[in-house]
Amino acid sequence: MNTLEILFFALSAFAIISAIMVLISKNPIHSVLWLILVFFSISGHYILLNAQFLAIVNIIVYAGAIMVLFLFVIMLMNVKKDKEPQKQLWVKLIGVIAGGSFLTLLIALVKQNTSFQGRDVLLKEGNIGLIHPLGVALFTDYVVPFEISSVLFLSAMVGAVIIGKK
Amino acid sequence: MPIEYYIFLCLTLFSIGVIGVLTRRNAIIVFMCIELMLNAVNLLLVAFSKMNYGAAKLISATTTAGIDAQIFVFFIMVVAAAEVSIGLAIIVMMYRNTHSIDINFLNRLKN
Image (cartoon, rainbow over all chains, first blue to last red; front, top):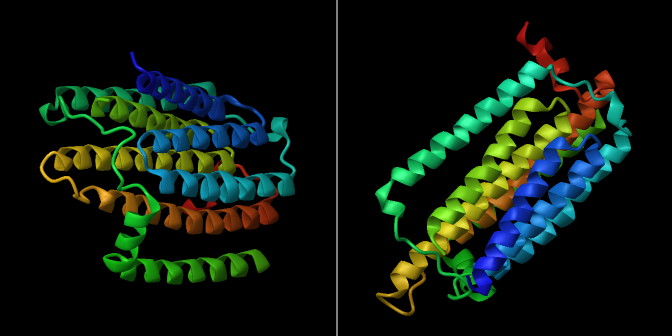
């Protein structure tokens, strides 16, 4: 077991434990903080895959902007942890069983698919995740979707202001 | 690293998101679980891009195979940021009208 495998399994265990803690925390603020840890471990996975640009963007956009927005809204509403009504126990149980069978089904499908067997992911090598190749591709082949996304942001901004103003 | 490990990790994270959507009633937690599912898909896209890049690099050393997937992940993040701003505005408006963020309160739409 080399260093990369140890890092992969440590980051994976960290991500899964934090994701479970998002679900079982009673306090919404704790859920947000655990979700930030999930995003940091996913950024660690991106760095392991040498996708440095996506790792930085993931930290800036998700852990930096979106999660702060969530925290801001939760603190604005002042949601108490005992005020949240719980679902009935059998509804929760059915939810967990449905999600677990979904996971089992997909794992069984992947296990018997022969096109995934023996394929390896290239770790820590390759320069396609660096800023220069991604920037060249973004501003030559994908410049039209890039401009359209600015229109999307403008409409999202106008929509958020209109909904929030009331 | 075999691709199956990445697939299993991402499937687990996605299923945790599904379970969260099915079992919680707080609208903000449900929204956060959707973000978790989006991130699991992003990680799987990057893993597949590096898998195809590793296969194409054996044929030509200067290939850019797999760069499309990373651009796609970038656009998913863009759309997710726009979606979060609108979704949180809707949740704030709903809290202002009903003084609750319970999603079961929203079933008035079905009548």
